[in-house]
Length: 380
Image (cartoon, rainbow, N blue to C red; front, top):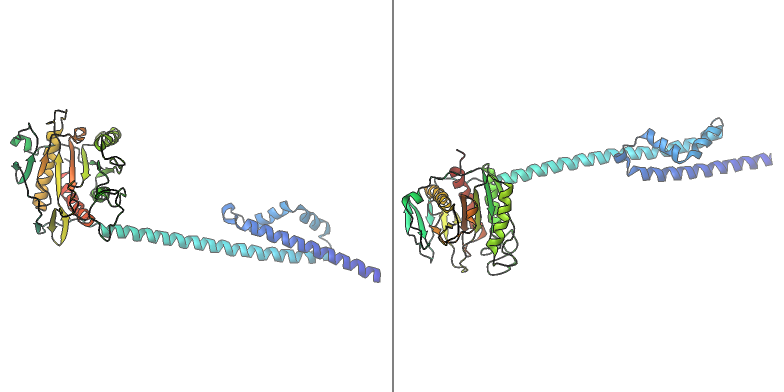
């Protein structure tokens, strides 16, 4: 009896050790596979098969001893352990799925809120508002006038005729390129638009320069259905000299890839470096920076076949601006230099405000300018 008792105790110890080792291995493997369960799509049956493959000795031991009562008793704790682990896996999977669904719902909600926010921010300019040009210390000068549009002819040899000023121009109005030869030009800082200056009213941060103004115009024009390419390259940095040579190459490359584009807007800021100069027009309850077209010509002797069409388009746009928002534009300036406007028959410089203006005023200008353009640049 004593010997039999010793043998049975050893067997029990053996089975307990085997069960303990098996449970530890099973738990470790279960935790290992739980991280990959969703990715690999592991279910309970495939998990058990993995255990059979990974620990063949368990399966072999079960086959040899499956008819013994002690083996059946030993398998019960293992199955219980596996069932516990698998139930944990199920719980984790359900939690992960619920979490992912919740994250997806939140993401969609955030996207909707962002979209709604953008929609709220983008308010088309109203018409029929009273306008008033605020006084500045710079007098208005002009040499010619067509239907209320004033032109200051600064060329040496061009004599403007009525035919030259009649805005009977035909251009592709669907595609527009916006760029900035003097990309670093900036404005008087405000609380909402403080920036690190890289020069006198200049910054390389495009969120605070004329590039930001171009971004606003792009946003509005796309809202009106135009195809817009906005080139945000810093053509005047690190060197201001030869800016037009660099922008010429950049824009020419854009036009090679977009052959039907006629309209090129080179957005600048008035170069007067005096913070007291802030040409402003009050439209309704808002203040907007005044703008000005600068048109190049062949007056300097360089070939420029498009200069008169460029001028006609500027006059056509300013006619509509005078109708909707009188004072939004200052007189058009015509100069001898080409300013890269030989590239297209709808090219121009648009100077938006001056150093004394704020970014808020210039962004307001883009709202009103886009409204004007939406009524002028209509597909025939």
